[in-house]
Image 1: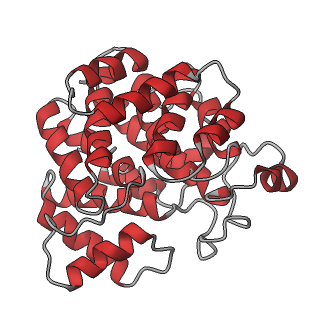
Image 2 (image 1 turned 120 degrees about the vertical axis):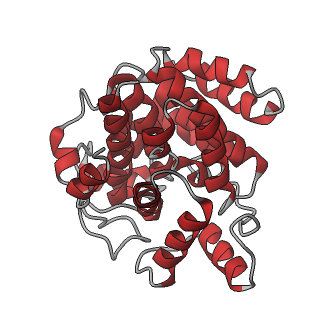
Length: 300
């Protein structure tokens, strides 16, 4: 499988987070319009109330966790839950950014003596599944191993069956897209292999059916929040509507407000598997603070 495309898909996932940072969790889209008009560049989080410690080109706490996963994969030549959990725990022991409910509950579970298999919160936020992208570098040619890693790393912090199913679904879809399948067909075929995921299937179907709608209005109707019942159909809408335009997908995502980071990471990842980084500004990548480090970690 094309290693260049896999690397570009991971970069696109990070770009989706970095672009989101400036307006992440800004639910009043009029504030975005007033401050920036149409936001098409990385900015420091002047509006994002939970990320004031961050600078332009940084990541949200979702992107920081994705970075930890990438570093752990490189250090261990693959996914090791114990080692990933140690690295994740070390990140948040002295973290200067925002710690969401899932992170706080997981840290509390670690403090009480629970291991990584039992540490997960009951959060239904899509963010737990969103950080899986770096796994494609090691398991793009081994879907079963990719699924195991995706489910395991998600459950460590988000022990919700639907969120874990989302992680599996995006792992399946990314591999099929890398093999040449169009994203919508990949979602449909991926769900056929997951008959138990009825609720996730319904959300995906709703997202696909919404692709003719105007994005900001559609995401407002689904809900701008983090929980999968809103974030999953919104993400599928972005992938389906902008299947051939990764740049537009990521811009429309942040202009819709709310939890743009989880949506942006997964949209960037899947459309990155489809197109690589073609079509998105090189500046989005090079202005990421961790760009050179990411490229270094992806070297074989």
